[in-house]
Image 1 (cartoon, helix red, strand yellow):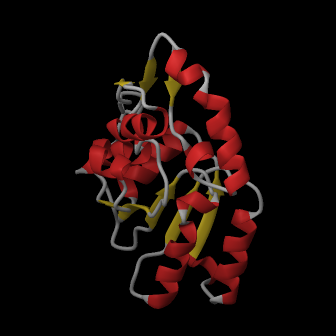
Image 2 (cartoon, helix red, strand yellow; image 1 turned 120 degrees about the vertical axis):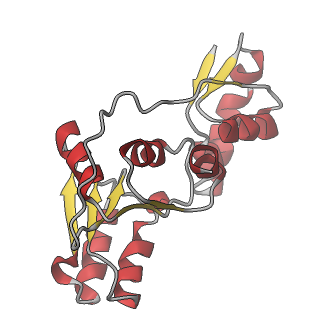
Image 3 (tube, one colour; image 1 turned 90 degrees about the horizontal axis):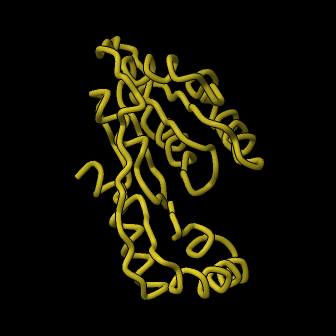
Length: 189
């Protein structure tokens, strides 16, 4: 049996690498005893690419025990996730530049490649200074505190297999603004 979280290797990146990833999965996936995934969105994409019917085992947010909401008037926007191009955090940095009335932005997550350095350079170039803060990876208690105290959780991703951060934000009672992706619609409506 196969458990597939997402198909980003098959659907994103350079064409040759997508082709290789699809070729690598093309033999074993259809022949496996079963294919499971974490969202109906990913199950549909598996069906499209590999002509298989995947079962769905939805993620839950039981792992995160929310704290009571306590957002101050100057609470920041909160982005949670890997800091990588498909998460499109650059859109949030540009939004702060275009609309100075937006709250500050707090970015939580481990950087991948040099994307965080690019974002930091853009924030400096746009003279956003301390309005954009990078916290890196944090522990669960700090994450719970941030969900409880943020102005809103913002997720501008261009690709997701499942919207776990959207689910955590909703479970925490935080306002949520997310991109219109099938995985986000499945979680957040």
